[in-house]
Image 1 (cartoon, one colour):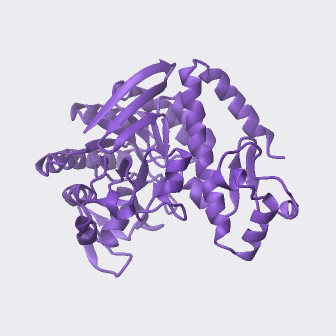
Image 2 (image 1 turned 90 degrees about the vertical axis):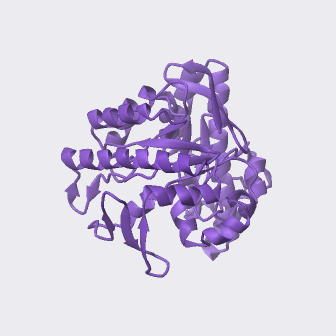
Amino acid sequence: MLRFDLLHTDGHARRGRLTLNHGVVETPVFMPVGTYGTVKGVLPSALEAMGAEIILANTFHLWMRPGLDVVRRFGGLHRFERWGRPMLTDSGGFQVWSLGGADGKGRKISEEGVKFASPVNGDRLFLTPEVSMQIQTVLDSDIVMQFDECTPYQTGDHITTEREAQASMELSLRWARRSRDEFARLENRNALFGIVQGGMFEHLRQASLDSLVELDLPGYAIGGVSVGEPKDEMLRIMAHTPHRLPVHKPRYLMGVGTPEDLVEGVAQGVDMFDCVMPTRNARNGHLFTRFGDLKIRNARHRDDERPIEEGCACHACAGGFSRAYLHHLERCGEMLAPMLASLHNLHYYVDLMRQVRRALDEGRFAAWRAQFHADRARGPA
């Protein structure tokens, strides 16, 4: 199902190797997000060429469309979307949380699960830990996430209290046990990860962590961050939780984040990251580079012959596409603009983790980290 080899450490930072049913993943690793069974605008072959070793898919959305009957006919998601390497699926908990809207009234949470209206056709649906495990078994993802309640930082004008965060965390723990039991009943051949919740309260995070560790799951994630909280609050939880998770099991920080967040997450002991930011920002003309972020729509790029980033090996840069050309495509609304931008941003994130691994292998992570932050603060030319 899963084997995690911890190769060496540098402070809290870790260099590891994750062996899954569909291949080997070197960690720390960034996982591109493919919500509907595709990383938007990017061919699977392009992901492989840039060195992506594992990608995500979304349990909730694939349950809505195309539905389990279709995926089952293909023997799982790998053959359906033509991706032969490892894959992780989320549980659907975050999407159910997001359906709540600003007032949190778009779904009804009970001990049994969550009732909500399908965003596709309005049908009344009921998602439970058992149903989430059943969906993910059909998808045949290498890593399956427990069904949890994503504790919000804020609902409307109301900031989640300690009591509310504790009740949510304890519900997620009960759902974790049910997820584990159903996962075992289904004889799923893959690996189930638990999710640490607890909001912005360290002692609740610790209580969640301690209870999940008792379940002895193959891996653990930190959820409920990057859900609207101030950055300093996220960094505080990120500094508290990862290095307290079991040493010889993979650690996954869900939905985070900027390049700086990834590097600081590694420094705190995180092995796995995912975020929609590279592709979402690409679709808005926002590009990541070693020397800060670049907004290709700005007029100053109108006649710039340079690539997005000198020395970058992505298809956009190495292929000779200029900033002026990408600026033109953006201004004209051509679909090639977000495609090239997505290739660049994803390559940047995948290569960033490749650089981190190299620095850890060579025992120079602290120096590399300092230079990374200095370079990013410099800003693009």
